[in-house]
Length: 195
Ligand code: ADP
Ligand code: MG
Ligand code: ZN
Image (cartoon, rainbow, N blue to C red; front, side, top):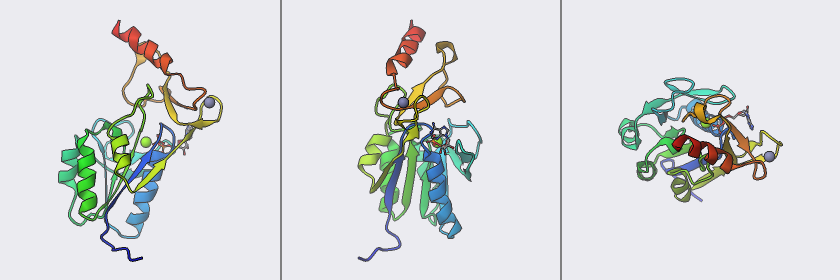
């Protein structure tokens, strides 16, 4: 089978927090970079947890990344020569990310998106689910359940209601397996805040 060098596609790395999504994204982008294939990595401007212009994993791997406000700004910053486009924290982008990824793949680029597929209440976290349906390659990453060591596929929010934070501050979230995950824990906190 013949594979053209300019064949584009979409890869998605989805899973809960601590499942190694950023680590895997960094690994995939870096190996192209080392082989002198032009790469660019982006992240949403809201995610400035560890570094302004880098993607950093919980295991402290990192790669340079450009913060952008939305999918449109991402698209306008992709250079013609770029072959591999990495995107971290894809769940913080607008739905336009699906269209942008489709466009880039159609233009012969390999776009690799990492992101949460479920929010902390266990609901689909768009645009990752929609992107997964349109991707050639989907990796479902699992963490180790912080409570029992089982397969962690959920992100449990564990902070007190008055400490609620949007981004993953240390200690605010845990990976949990099916048995240990309890979304009502978080819902009760949410209801307490609204009241
Ligand atoms: P993600 O981007 O999915 O949040 P990262 O790639 O940033 O994940 O971090 C993955 C790393 O986090 C692992 O290699 C490991 O060193 C560390 N880690 C901490 N807690 C856990 C856990 N409960 N399960 C798996 N890895 C964990
Ligand atoms: Mg990450
Ligand atoms: Zn568990």
